[in-house]
Image (cartoon, rainbow, N blue to C red; front, side, top):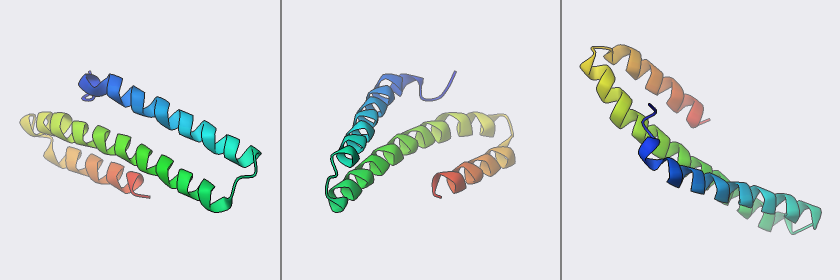
Length: 90
């Protein structure tokens, strides 16, 4: 069971909001809105996605990392966390 299960509804709500923001971006482009306004909205979408990622990362760290430590798989888990963090921060 994924570590985010308890927060699944909240995460889905956040993603639906982000979906609406992306649709708003598409509308802004169709309507030839001012570049700066579009860029500000893009920054808002990125921040919202980052927040979802941080929540998932935190849940994974708190749940899966602890299980890995209990099972003696520290090195494997640290490698996984470092790799996912590299990808997340690109």
